[in-house]
Length: 160
Image (cartoon, rainbow, N blue to C red; front, side, top):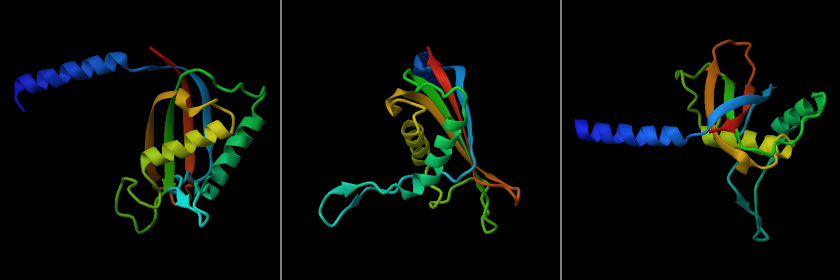
């Protein structure tokens, strides 16, 4: 890549960065001790209609509802633009050689984020997932043999 191309790309990235929403105040900091599972692909029923299996989200939704019910006072449903960061910790299998979570069984980072965001909407933390304007999803292994699968979610008010 020549210098002119590099300058052009840097200019475009600067323009995009100026338009990105920024993290404002923290609205919620949530911890869930459960495995986050991405939604399976939609299935076609014998009768011909399409449905989305959701059994694998039951634990996460239960954790989200428990967290909300324990908060005093009960938080209002978020109805403004937010940025959500997801930090997903998985127990590292003994057979795993990678330092990165690349297991197909654990899911892609975007599908994991979608599962968490759906639970936040169903659990009445957020009015609608269209209010999520940005965020970061990180999935990682914990080397500790006694570690549990864990999800930390930080919800920020989005500001320009």
